[in-house]
Amino acid sequence: MDNNYSGIIISKNVLITCLILIITLIHFASSSFGNQKTNFYKDENIDISFLKAWDSKEATLYALFIKMKKNWKTYWKYPGDSGFSPEFKIIESNNLKKIEISWPTPKVFFENGSVINGYKKELILPIFFYKEKSSKKIDFKLNFLMGFCDDICIPIKFIINSKNALKTNELKNKLVSNSLEKMPQDLSNSENLIECEVKKINKKMKLISKFDNNFFSNNNSIDQLILEYLDGQIWFSEISKTNERFEFLSIINSLDENNFFLDKSKIKYTIITRSGGFQQKGCKSPIN
Image (tube, rainbow, N blue to C red; front, side, top):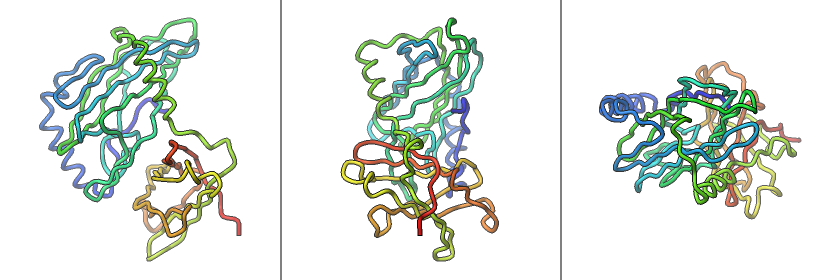
C-alpha cells in the first residue's frame, strides 16, 4: 500500500465539493490545523488516540482508535462521490520499510444524492509499520489528516509519533484483533467469481457485473458494491442491482468520454455482504 494518499477524491459534484472544502478549511484553519497535537486529538465531537499494539519480527502494529458523536462519520480509503481521502505523510523515520493500513470493511451511506463509503460512531484502524532490519526497532513521525463530517466537514490534522505512543491494554488488543478480522477477504487467489462486460445503454457506457450465484448466496448475499479503477482517468457511478439477482450495473465515467479503454484487470471490487466484506481485482469476460 502506498504511504501517501491524495487529499481529496474528484467527484461528479466536484464544484460543490471544492466550495465546501474551501469554506471548511478557512473556518477551521486556526483550530484543527493550527493546534496540532501528538498521538491524541479530542473535541466535542471527535476523539482520536494512536496507540502501540504489539511487535513482531517483521513489523510493529499500531492502531488509531476513533470515536465519533451521533451522525458524525469519517471516510474509507476510497470515500465515494465526495469526501476526504485519509492522508499520511512521513516527516522523519528510522528503519521504516513500508506502511500498511488494514482498513475494515466500510459501510455505504446515501446522503443528498451522493454515495459515501465510511464509518460512523467508531473506527479502529490497525496500521503495520514494517522494519528495514528486523533486529532494530522502528522510529517515525508522521503527519496525519482525516476528514470528519456531519452538517459541516472538519479536516483534522495532527502528528503520529512512535516515541510518544502509549501501549494498548488487553481490551484494546482484542478490539484491534476484531478490526483486523473485519478486513475484506481477498478473493484474487481463488477462482474468478465475477464476470463483466461493457455495453452502451441509453447513450452511456456501462459496466455489467455478474457474480457467482453459488458463492454469493445465503450469508454471502451482496448488500452493497464499491467499484474502483486503478487509474484516476476512469471512475464508476450510479452502481445498482438489476432485475437479475446476482447482477449489478454501473456507469463508466472518463476524463475523455470519447476515447478511453477499460482494462478489466484494473477494476477493483469491494463486495459488502451479510457475513462481511470481500475484495477482488479484475473480472473475466462472460462465456457465451
